[in-house]
Length: 227
Ligand SMILES: CC(C)=CCC/C(C)=C/CC/C(C)=C/CC/C(C)=C/CC/C(C)=C/CC/C(C)=C/CC/C(C)=C/COP(=O)(O)OP(=O)(O)O
Ligand SMILES: O=P(O)(O)OC[C@@H](O)CO
Ligand SMILES: [Mg+2]
Image (cartoon, rainbow, N blue to C red):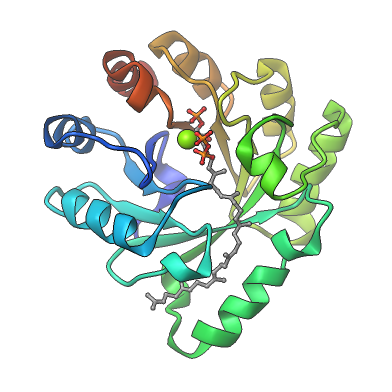
């Protein structure tokens, strides 16, 4: 099994955004630990399949981060399943998951499936709005969620999500201190190698998403900055 516990950098590619073959090759051959396919809106099965087939020309581990049941398809190395632990709506914590397991439970290969406990902290991002996340949290609240993720629910990943916004470095550092076994992912607003390095001082894995589409050269440069 691909071991995300050894990763420190991943790119997240959005099936709803266009990327040229040339740029995709640079991303996949960059030395990043994995490429995650995921996004919140406009993600269709056709777009997921197209992106998967293009990434599959390279050897980089390829992960589907599932955002809807309709876009689940075989062919990825791993499947990351978000559960939004600071959502006010149970649908996004266990509701959709129950429906999916009813549908796919018998054919699921649990070795390929990794649960992500998401804590969404940018109240203005699409994912926060979609999932009715309560993002007005103190550091103590977020630390409590992190401990719940690890100690109560034994989630393999705790994901601090600031999608589109560079987050609070001190908060990330404080959260890291309460985690022993659960891997800490940080994502949001990493647009330069310096920001990637700063967050990588604390988070186990940094995720670079939008910068791929907005400032490609700086996005690519984040890989080496976290090593
Ligand atoms: C046939 C086959 C291969 C079977 C495989 C078996 C398998 C893996 C089955 C799946 C079983 C299962 C339990 C699925 C989960 C079902 C599900 C839909 C769960 C809900 C997931 C969820 C909470 C989604 C919420 C949205 C979310 C948090 C998405 C994560 C991505 C994210 C935060 C992106 C950031 O936003 P972005 O879109 O990039 O924003 P911008 O456009 O502004 O950048
Ligand atoms: O798009 P950005 O802001 O880089 O965030 C990355 C990722 O955490 C999004 O789910
Ligand atoms: Mg995005």
